[in-house]
Image (cartoon, rainbow, N blue to C red; front, side, top):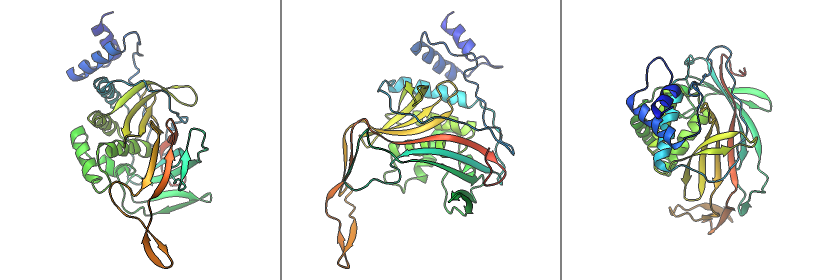
Length: 329
């Protein structure tokens, strides 16, 4: 079987793919010779949006090795992912329906004690947090001591509000521009920060096929993004890792199912020893009170981390659409 015959088999569908998709797929086949894909490996069943919803389950992933593809090949894989996720069946939720998300968070997102050193042996806090968000973004629901409470969330972002994300463009360049403008008040609103915001969007929101494809196409345009198709999770299952190094010391990963490209988890791992010291290079001062007076905080070591330490993993346990806050798919 020659390359074009393989291409036709992998892309079997009522109409042939666009020329640029053919080129990307052919390049991927050449790079992955000897690794045949299922005829319908690109076909993904999306969430069934109705009174009840499909539930998606995953396991916590861990850092595994450093085998990554060079940037050009990473762009080929990301193009393939975008083409695949865009084929998902999808019914948008009504504005009065609620999007249920449940993530298992393992790590230090809640803060690190001053002077603490994190190593691969450091025990990490482990929490599971269910959350309900109205699709129109007007209310959020959460559990307090096991009891449901809802509130006005105030200002929201597209990473956690379906209506806001749905209003954004699906052209990858335009989407990148929107994210840069939305987060320009953050420090810093650079390429590393934008990659993280895309990762959080995939983690916390229900994403339409068009916007999911746009996100992966936009990620392909960010410098320093790599792909590891040999990653594994804690259960030993294969995983596909899309990553970028942030601040020179931590590897931020988006972990996907390697066959369906369904989102699984976000993971951050130290790729070098790192110390977080005060004052920071930006020159911003911190103050405290001593003897009733406001005084600058003296220089000190905030915390440090050892190379190879995975300090944050947020794994999707479930996502779906329900009619009322408190319901689960």
